[in-house]
Length: 240
Image 1 (cartoon, rainbow, N blue to C red):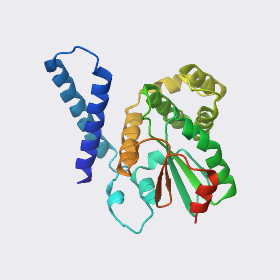
Image 2: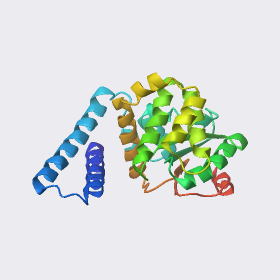
Image 3: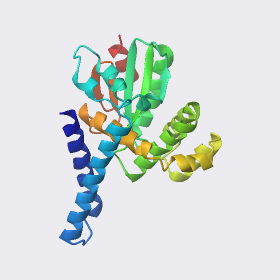
Image 4: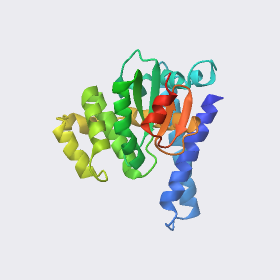
């Protein structure tokens, strides 16, 4: 059942994206149909690749089992690779998962407050990619994930710099951040081509949609889903 839901989500997302990007073109119906079919089969192939090549690491069953378990813990159970960007106490009694987009103004607004919460309360904070606002959103998400393949601490530094940059984020600003963080740019260029980044983004996208995420930030605070920005004190009041 869950596999059918994943296929539906991936194909629906691709078709919506395709028609949005191509709505002003004059492609023939035949070419349009061929492209749609290709997109659908690519997504199905990606899904099959995810479930066959890394089946030991990706298991969607936790989302549908054990109703007594906090949703945050279920999300962390699905794919360990998604959990690499995190700060706070590993044994914390509270877990916050933030689904983020680096072009999201409210993500930037809440970022500093969430970081303060990890210093003030017993919280483990995870960052899951949910690039939905623009074409560059996916590029920036892939950038952080690619850096994480080199060095987790550098990836966290890049993440923090991208969230606290003055003004809107641009590709030039990201390039400067990578240089300042001393990222191995040759290895970074190679890692940016890796299919595992697409797999991670597809899974985190599915998870965000599964819990009702429509935009960013989407927070999961223990067992509660919170859409959009909320103040720091409100988050503190929701903790155990």
